[in-house]
Length: 132
Image (cartoon, rainbow, N blue to C red; front, side):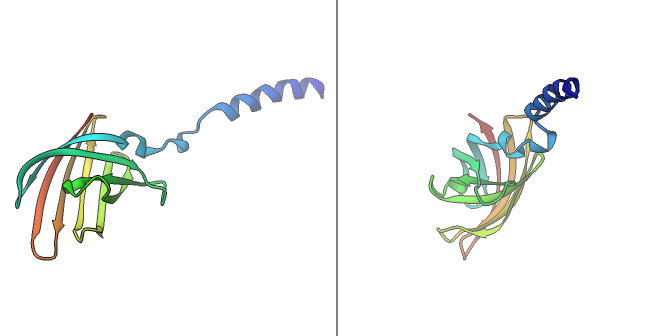
């Protein structure tokens, strides 16, 4: 019995130190500051910084701050699945209704396509985000 405990104890300790594949947070690769190069049907081209952080609401959600150059305190929520990012339809505190989607290419580029509507005009936007 003593030999069995001596054998089982190290195995249990090793098993508890191993991170399961299921524990990987798919949002990690999206988190950080990104240079956004954007083309809009209303505003033309522009460049600015977008910051992406984890959402506390759900384990598959992130917050994109300053997307559409709305301001660094304005967040747009998105869901993450693998390398895909989905911006579900939502209205920001500035009154913009946005939705769209994008894909992470490698670890340093996100290609986004989304729409923004201020209640009068719909803007179709494409953006390339490059990790800083």
